[in-house]
Image (cartoon, rainbow, N blue to C red; front, side, top):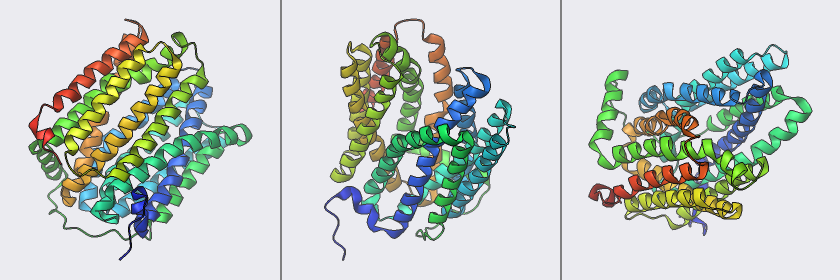
Length: 406
């Protein structure tokens, strides 16, 4: 018998196969964070238009959404490990191609868009398999730790990656960062190759359409699943999109800050998310998880209302830490609950539908708030959108099917 570590957040690291996945993903996520910085600046230098990054990110998101559902079917039908390795290798080839074209001076904005679209398609195949493989690498009591450690490495990557990108871009240009990101995919694949996930009884092969329909019917039959996915979708479209579009204006006009202040807001939110994920893993709640998730996300939107109304930058910064804590704790608990309660042979499809439902309305939300941004002050619009979404999560607490979710 191996005694569990005092820090329960580290419990998943006792599993060799998870250590391999986590190490590879940490490197890959740092590469992705650096890639986003280089991508944004390179897009701007190609067009000299502020809208360029938005277009690039939209294309990447559309590519991801386009393959998410088929990715869920494939990950429930075939080896999730091999699907992840294939996606990593495919994206390595795509980004290496982008680095080559950029280094030779032949990169145009249209070519950049094409490479980014293929990158998004590969990511859509990766995510369902990634979510579905975690329960096959650790024992069920360690799932909270595994999800928390993934969250910690993801947030740390968005601190480390941009710092690396800033140094490399100035010295060697964007092509060097693109090449480094391609190499990070290879590192991820090489770490995952020797992993040996547990096997599970797979559902019979019935064709993509039938298997996708079976996954959808499963979600519809489980009220806590479809209600939460629908609420996430509306929340991202209404409150998250409003914050993304309007926060720069709020920082500049109301708090008289600059880009440093704007960046600090997201850094502090990331700190809060790390703390929330760690606390979740340490406490490992196993009862009344539905009410806890909805209460945390209601509180997150209360902080959003106060953020929009805050007359001081310091107050807004503290509220961003609180928002991050609620998001880190709540989303990590949600991911863990889904992995524990959904049958293994259906898990990747459910995760793909969770991602698809959550992200499907996000591009529309970004466009809507860009159009509505002149209707009132940015703080008022952020507060109003957060209040509406907070009411959606609060109404979930009145649903006995949510209250009974353990």
